[in-house]
Structure formats: structure tokens, C-alpha cells
Length: 206
Image (tube, rainbow, N blue to C red; front, top):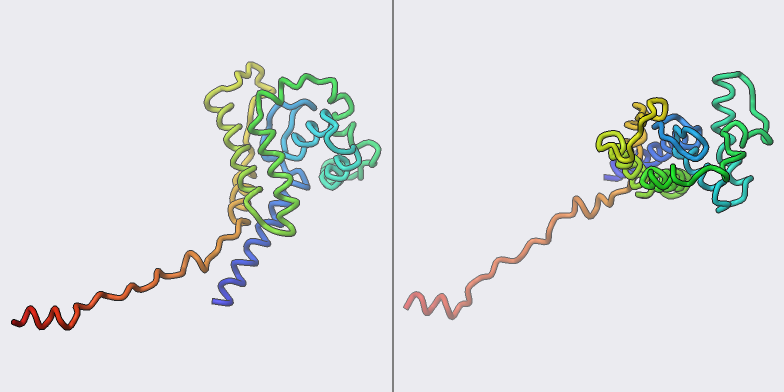
């Protein structure tokens, strides 16, 4: 039983770390219009909203975006982007002037992106359900727009698209949730079988 619980604990930790790297390195999971233009990761959607609303300092957003910017820069251009140029790379310099209507039409994707980013960071310390809830919320928002056509999108270049990596994110989000195996495997207490009283036995024999 100890080896089984240890293996499960490693699975939670590995799934949480994979999910963290998917989010923080900005592996494309989807494609939706947002305030900064087109967002392909939960971190991009979250960052554009944070910059537009001044919820947190700019250097915090830059710190979140920088690892992914470095990874993308090395892979695509083989260069490391400058810290001062992060907002320009993600088209966040004029995001405050953009209309909030784009985000309001996709509240599920935006809220799910918030939960996904927060769950990925918190999951490194304590895996929980935040990542799973955020991923499911993002998927529901994408399904609602892609299948039900809400909101209606007439521009094919801004059409919603889901990358296959979303499946990996969903599996990791579910696998990072800790379940109490003791409660699941614990058998129900055996109820004692009621025995007839001695007096009743004698009365039946008579």
C-alpha cells in the first residue's frame, strides 16, 4: 500500500509540473481573439487583461511572460528577447485602449485562463482542483463559440481553433488532482446480525 501511495504521489507531482510548463512556457493550446489581438495561451489572455485593468504591477506580468518569451525566441529566432521589449512582443503596449467587448464575449475563456495560470503556479506547491476547473472552463468557452457560434465570428482569420496540446493539458489537469484513496478503498463497517433472544426461541419451541 505504501508503494502504491508513493507512486500516486509522484503522478500528482509530475502531472502538476507538466501542466506548469505548458502554461508558463506558453505552449499554444487554443486560438481566440483578445484585447492584444490573438491569444493562443491562457497566460496571454490573462496578461492582456491584467495590463488593461491595472490589476497587478507591470513587472509581475513581465515576469510571467518572460520564460515563454525566452523559449519562443530561442526556438524561432535563436535570440533571447530583452526584458524591456516584452510588452511589445505580446502587443500589450496599447492594450488599455482596446475595446473590452472582445473579452466580455468570451468570459468563460478569460476566467478559465485566470484559473489555469493560478492553478499551474499553486500546483507546484500543492496540487489542487484549480487547474482542472480552469481548463474545463476554457474548453467550455471554446466549445460554445466553435459549435454553437456564440459569439458569431465572420472573420476566418480570427476563428476559434483548439490545438491538440489542449488534450495534454486536460489530462495533466485531471491527473494533478489528489484523491483520498483511503476514503475510496475503505470498506463499509460490518453490521452485526441481530440474533433472536433466548426467550423467543423457547416460546417458539413451545
